Image (cartoon, rainbow, N blue to C red; front, side, top):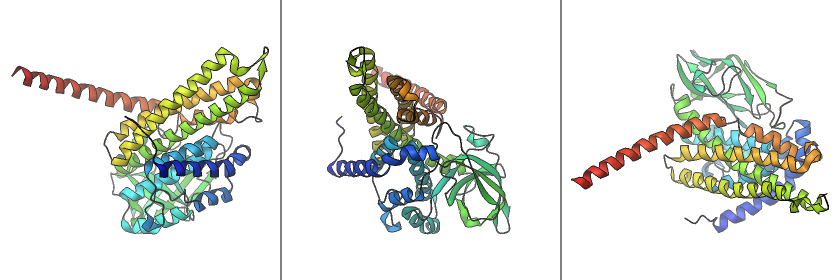
Length: 393
């Protein structure tokens, strides 16, 4: 099977790369040190149409195809994993509105999300609940004015500035998804700083104390919160992270190639030492394999194939492990310099570690992949027995 970008996708990739190299790359290190993303940078992304790329044109979006979106995520991940998390969570909110939102909800929020007037955030993880998402403790109760929400969310990317939060809560023992605006009484956020990676992702704790929202802010229906809304969001998030990890690995390779061409040890440049060549080769081969996995996930996602959940999990699992290995090798190649903020590879390593955790840890992906693998194995055995029986008949 031959996989090749069409002309429009190649042109889009070139535009993404030029914009990001001019706008994002030069400030990524400083943003990391400041643990902040300037609003003007986000506005530039909005002006380019990137925040609303996946929104239908009738709502002010760009109606971008999913493969081109992946190329955008890869280019941003190559420059700043923190900024990639903005596109990830913002587009997760967009995707659930596209699929599960009412027409009123879409008309209200999609144009604002497309323009960047409103930034969306994803509120699932809690202080006591991470991977066991079905056991969330935030509670929603029916109220005369809609719903009353009490609870806390943690590790919310761009929670410091987002204005629309997709919040998951228990309602009479069933999980529901709600749209909660920052301006609601009883809603507040608290910055999280001092992180290992994703330092400029402006993470926050979210507090809801007697927070009342209208009934129209329920997304989908009660009981569909995790099985439908959450799974849609997380599958899309894994897709974004997979492409972003591909970009991050490419950044590790770029930095390593540049450094090994200039650095001399034992009378020769580093690129001429065999152990260095081994690490470079592993990065190159890994990138080729990761790109094919991302293409496969995009192909299935574009046509709505049910197997896309499995393939997206595989892509996220492989690419995040690859990014971690590549970042670790990139630091090793740089030696002591790799531990210095004078070189970006130390940031790549810190960010790569986070990539193995977000949108479902690698261990959760292993569980998903192995379960589906067993199911496919059993189906294949049954099909073989059935075919054998027909042949004997």
